[in-house]
Length: 172
Image (cartoon, rainbow, N blue to C red; front, side, top):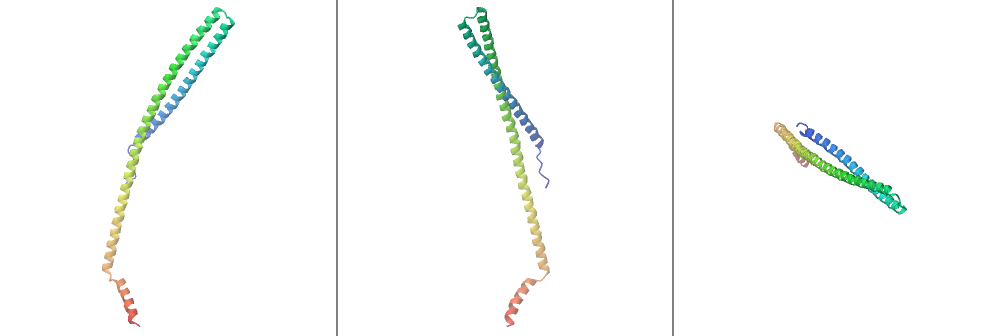
């Protein structure tokens, strides 16, 4: 019998590469999401720090233009928080899509691997069946050969056994 060869091995290799690439994309997306979350945290902390600084300036009795500048600066900081929040949400969506793509690629690869394993089991069973058939044929040929040998020769084994028994008993 010919050696086992999985015909879809090329597709399986391709799907393994797709899964590896999907895993890399997911890792990059998760890193981008962590970076966006860190930027959002930094932006929120900056707004709180500037609000505390504005409160301190108001208590000290700062000039009107300085207070106005700080309010404008805080408004800009809040816009940065909103931008950072949108960036984080976008990064979260990219991560979600990358995770879905990875699951899909994994499922495709596993499907082909299960098909390969099933095909290999069938092949192994067929090899064992062929081996059994060959062994049965060999055993049959040996039996026929022994039968042919025993028909050509007298039954010496039986005669020797009967002589020794009968010869041993009569000789005494």
